[in-house]
Figure (cartoon, rainbow, N blue to C red):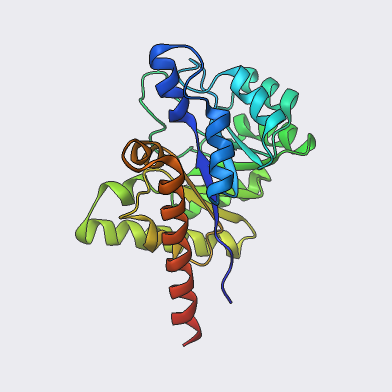
Length: 251
């Protein structure tokens, strides 16, 4: 049986382009609406401590004005917790965050920071916000997420995307095994970071992954082909890979 594979479109870097010059253009909320029309199932936005792309006003407008569920990426800080509890997005994905990094580099060490993360997971959950943890493809990290009470994990696919050949195959095998482990212990499994037209199919074929979150590549590709076209092509590649994998399993 083929499971529907959801596509979450991360609109952070629409805001990056806007902020490079200031003003209101291009508008991340407009990008979110276009993503819905092109086949996205959800919108992801990361409000960083330094507000380098998405702003507080963007989050308020996304919660108020879009129909798709919002996945609010956040660091485990009191400030971000307060913002999440104020706006109550559909989901909150807790990610690691360093001021000096260009983008999120690697997964959250859930196993090493159980005590620090526990109150964030609990308070978000109590508010009706679906919590996910952005982690490496490691059973230890998945077990920690389960122990913390997070119903969802998002597996970091950056290392898989950065390698090729035998190294990429090893990274893919890690992700396949981690996704199977997540399902076995009762976690919903998502994946994302660095996925492109060239790398998405093997990840989309993993039946135990139910959602992919993709942003930077789509915004970059939009420069050449348009955001609508980029999202539709990504959606088609995901659906084709999932259907082929389902057919191979049934055969």
